[in-house]
Image (cartoon, rainbow, N blue to C red):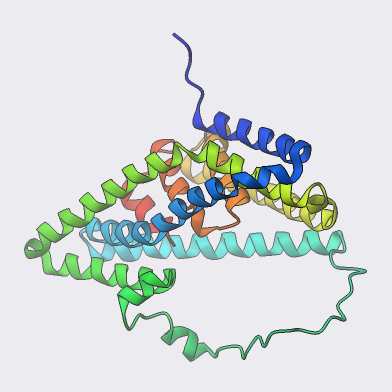
Length: 287
């Protein structure tokens, strides 16, 4: 019986073939753009439902506001530390490599960037006035706030909200299954997206901003090493195990150019390969 090729290996093969095909066939690869865009649309359309159902379900499954405060506090502390470290690494690498030196900044802005919103306005914009509009506009932050509040309300309501809680959990399970179905097509989608990008722009897409690209990848590698250490020390997750789960996520981010678009992949790999509980994964990953 032949051994089945893992999805991670299929994605890696797709990337290699996409780069080679894009460089060899050039603009002919652009005919694959619609297929890649369909895959990207399917990924993006899952984001808002997953964010809402995962967070709401995770919050109400905790069944205790105090546990929510404990988990939320730890997650917030982790995000502050990792974000600060990532920012420091990016700034340090760009300073060492002199990114931006020699570029022409004399061109005038053609668009009005508007005024920077004040702190009060930022806080007010976090809360939705119409959750349906927030979902339609893809406003993740407002959806997250509403999902947390709804989850807390389910906990407070107790037994009377049990059927609603089961409905949220059932919908979350269906969305996870749908994510798995979509991700089976990720090698094809990634091949089409990456092949189209390289075919359209050629090797120049790398050479034109080569130093910037190199700085980004050096920074990402350092952050990855930091994350691997965190996973090993605090989660007892092996290096190989962590990298195997992270690889498809990184490739999806690379080809879709969307951090939000990686959410379905991240959730699937976290649950299936890292064996994180749905309660914790559903609450932390959308954030």
